[in-house]
Amino acid sequence: MSLFNHIQAAPADPILGLGEAFKAELRPEKINLGIGVYKDANGQTPIVQAVKEAEKRLLAKENTKNYLTIDGISEFNIHTQALLFGENAQVITQKRAKTAQSLGGTGALRIAAEFIKRHTTAQNVWISTPTWPNHNAIFNAVGITIKEYRYYNKETKSLDWNNLIADLAHAEKGDVVLLHGCCHNPTGIDPTPEQWETLAKMSAEKGWLPLFDFAYQGFANGLEEDAFGLRTFAKNHTELLVASSFSKNFGLYNERVGAFTLVAENENVANNAFSQVKSIIRVLYSNPSSHGASAVATVLADNELKANWIAELAEMRNRIKQMRAKFVELLKQKGATQNFDFIIEQNGMFSFSGLTPEQVDRLRDEFAIYAVRSGRINVAGITEANINALCDAIVKVL
Ligand code: PLP
Image 1 (cartoon, protein in one colour):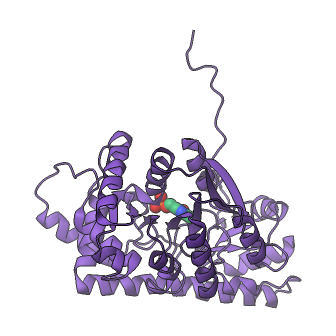
Image 2 (image 1 turned 180 degrees about the horizontal axis):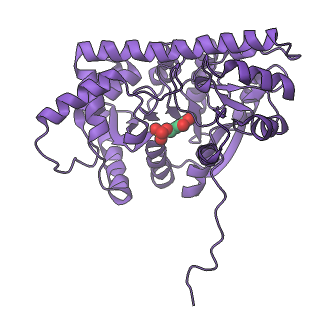
Image 3 (image 1 turned 30 degrees about the horizontal axis):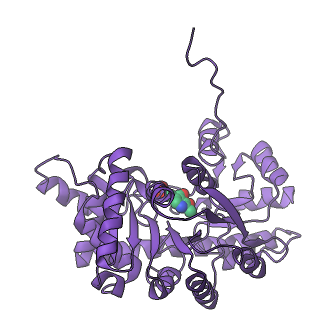
């Protein structure tokens, strides 16, 4: 008698499953606009040169493979805080922020979910609709009630601001409100600075616990600019949480580098709360791995390497912006009946293209073009080599 034979197959992950289907696709002209990975003008996901250089230095000087501490590399954690809040930000100088290196942004979100469930009074976590599907899965995994706030207006293809505010008006004191720090996934639409200020004020008045998912710092307008929302909240909140990732902005996808950061009212409260974060990590995976975070810390500690990294990040950001403009222009030229100008305004890798699930299916079946059925496309997957075929195909399925 098998103890396993009653187990049903799990549904494929909507995004990672798409990657597997793309791999298995035999048509040579195939185009992948699915998973959120940066690609350069040649369609490759490059290793950031500053990281390569840091790795050389690490290889030369590494002399032990001893365990890291539960919260990881302290230099990495210090640099992470400076990127998030700005050099010498008050939350840092007041020692109210505590950071643990994590297994990517996903790992940081899972730590956040466990911490919220076990150590806060939060009854609900408010998640934008639409959002990155793993948000729902992570909070479901720890058994916190999920409530949705509207985010996207299909008609205007912009932020559904009035409904967002109307929905969040129901969030209660202590509820967690999950916000995408920038480059909202999947819509690519972020609040304006004024809207961030309004939200931060509302949050502070209502006593929410904000949780920032900050996976794309540097992909919208720049490292400092993209932190505007988080820093606005940090100014008028005594407590908040951040799950940040270096997967995209350092191109360290397979090294799993991220950070969980907790901000508390004062140093003492922060230390107590953080000791519980360490207990959570201890039973999840004990302590993180060293390589990727060491590379990040090495780059951020060296002025020249850091400048090179910032320049490479700007190159990635600008290539995506150029592709957005070219894509919209070419669709127009090829006679698209719909206006796609909104794509130029969106931030980060993703565009909520407005394509319907049926149109996405046709793109895959008839043209070997892979995108998420919600209509989300990864603009970084567009290159000079595939943009013509892509626009021809889209015009055909519209
Ligand atoms: N949050 C959002 C919105 C994302 O899009 C991603 C990755 O796609 C992550 C978090 C997690 O990133 P990772 O775990 O790869 O660092």
